[in-house]
Image (cartoon, rainbow, N blue to C red; front, top):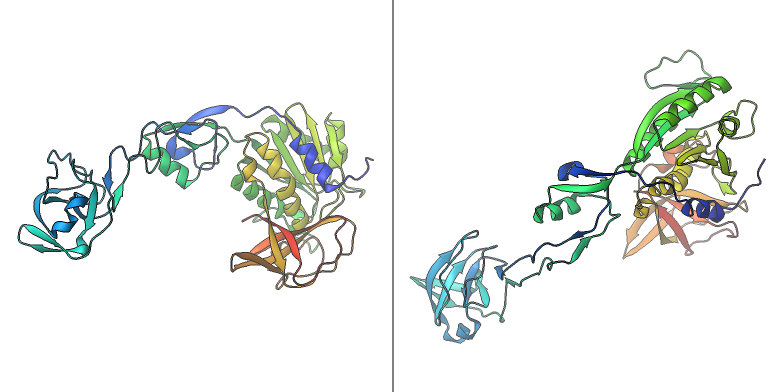
Length: 403
């Protein structure tokens, strides 16, 4: 059995992996949500391309402000190409989004004037250039707007639409096959026939994590604690996936067969056992460009270790490292007694107050690594290194945000 390694070493092993990138595909813009961009997006033009009104008002020459009264020479609706120029002593009524007429350099808002017949009287003056959007205010021609490696979200889609980009090159999402092991597990909707049976949640939690963080989940359900059955399930999972993630069967029990199957089908074990809490019995193996991630069986343990290890593993296929958990600082409002020399990940309750994060354990239950409900609500993971001691009120700590 391989020796347990520390958390930082286990992460470094994943970061140094260089698996084959997934294929690059071209998709219609509105089908790219959640995909990772495979090309830089640069502006093809200035936006706006000409000075544009930022609100409703009257386009004028600023030097005419001292006249106090200007003749309304015309009207300039949004979307029109006005040929009329603004002349001395005159103005043109102009609306939000309209091009500024030639000769004008300032827009005085409707609220700053009184209309008297075919003229306006200036009630409150404005500085030169007021409410005029300059050329390239949104972006300048050839400006890099969205770099490759960006995960597509609603903002990126909106910007792409403004650039008239209807198709995009993106990385296809890695396929992640999922199954949970345990003879006691019941599928959703399956009738319970014994008190020893429990509802399987790990495989469904993992399916949701994969979908949220950039993979395509392939749900294979629950598998009995039988070596032959597990071997067949693993071989099936590997036929169509880049990553296989399992829960259960990686510890040292008599029925923990997953770790044995992984080795027997020819996968190289990258690490087996990490000095962390929860989830020390975790295993990562590789064969060519495929990976198997064996997670522990308890619900909280499998969820935490999936967030820690599955996310960066998925990111290796798409260069989207921003999809990994973000670490920030928070101030502890409740003491915490650290009892191990492991790197610990503890569910904590967080809130933001006066531009800083505060952390306590208010509704979190003490107990085993099976309490998935500890991750409900405004929750993050407090990270304590293997050398950290107990923490006290007011201490600054690292927390990992997953929502």
